[in-house]
Length: 304
Image (cartoon, rainbow, N blue to C red; front, side, top):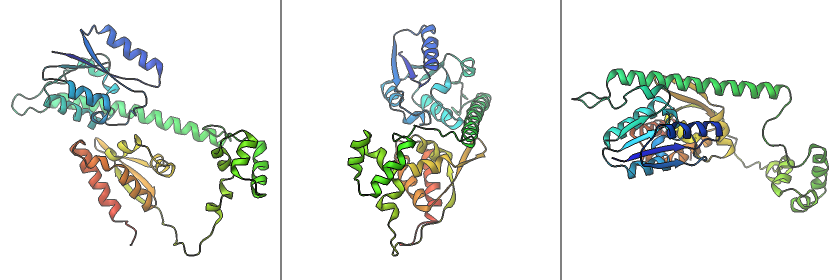
């Protein structure tokens, strides 16, 4: 039997240090370590994480998977149950060394049906829901803090490369015919910084074409939580990311949907982004979620 250790490096060094300490104190014999890179989003489904996929490919029946605590591997209730089903299918044991789940035997199943015992499933769902509630509250408090800062005139994010005192000079020079490349050299900043300073003066923003059709109006669509989780971990364009960030979470039993308001073109682009959820590598719940979202998007397809 092999001892397979799964680690996920966090941007919070203190959290990562605690994870390593817990696993070191566990005294795991001859561990085979699979360490997820820090850039891997925690919102990504566990079964889609590269290193956890390598762990499952490496594992053999009877091996034990060790993690410091459950939430180093999964986030929501659905993810936990999906992982437990895969581990049961592959005859792998799960050892959790810290947190509320460490005192539970998550491998206990009914001798005839092979399903999780009802008491185990209830505890898993309860603890996972409590953890999800804690994260949601932290996120809401963060957003409240950002809004309060904005109300006071404080803007988040990086400071503009072109100082506020020089922005008017840059814009005036651009209007006089100075090129973006020349302004970039003059002010020792990137061309992108100059384009940001004069964004509303660029030809693509000022040109008016009477033949252009009227813009699409925003529509409100409910995006299944499985789709939203996948997209939050994907590379998105600013408009797509903004639509997700401004979505409203609606609880539905143990899961949720994200009520997204955006023009149909953005919904179609988001649907294209989650194409991998239609592949055989995705879990059934993800494939079903994408089909539901696709059906909702199709009702708002722009006429040909």
